[in-house]
Length: 309
Image 1: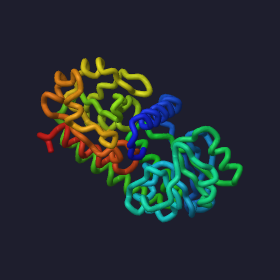
Image 2: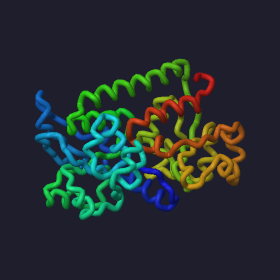
Image 3: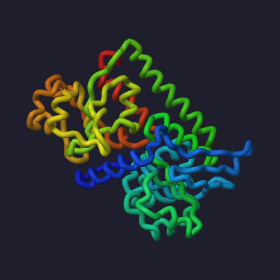
Image 4: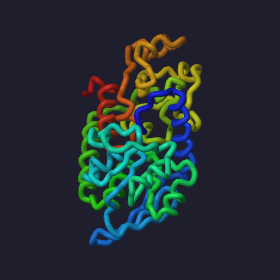
């Protein structure tokens, strides 16, 4: 997900994302499966829609309509193959300079003008994949992962597709080692604090069954939205009753600040407000399913358990 600047647009985006996660839920995380020969190619991948795509060689011109996947491709050394990115892409800096396209309202003509041999997306508004297929352009729909491990699975799958398997596997090992270093400090923790993770001023929050929630699970924290539906939007009454001990704000681009949250009617009784445990975090780092999710976990560890870090 990209940097969100308009609350109403954000609410619509969140609803679409969470609905997509719900629709893809079959009891286990559905990620593309890849097979390849010992020589590397051909590589065959089945995407989240069940489309089987075979690559006889590494794609040379990739359009990526998801900032998280852009970050992943650059992290595994495949960034030089990207010729177009989602309009919200701003990391790494070299990716921000690439031609911008919309991932939520994709324009077929603009995509085709980039002459891609692969289009990667996490959202299809209807018939984009079908239209690309008619133009003989390969595409992969990679559903938003539900777990941190799912993010790493996609990393390795993209490594296979782009000819960077070794780099992807090595990166996964390094990222997992960093997570283990965090969790090692929590060995004596039986149950972590109650947390409210705000995605939008409309009280949209991290859902059970998404990768942000999984990050809190890794840290033994309790997501107060555990009984919320999809999309996850809490009522003011339910949030106050849940009495979170920590509030994490990932909606600063929408104008939310620690001071504005503390000033909300009725929130003075919340433990997090009373104990000054309200924190603003970088929305992009915490909301994109890419390698920086480990940065988020490390930051959360320090916020939730300052005495252990």
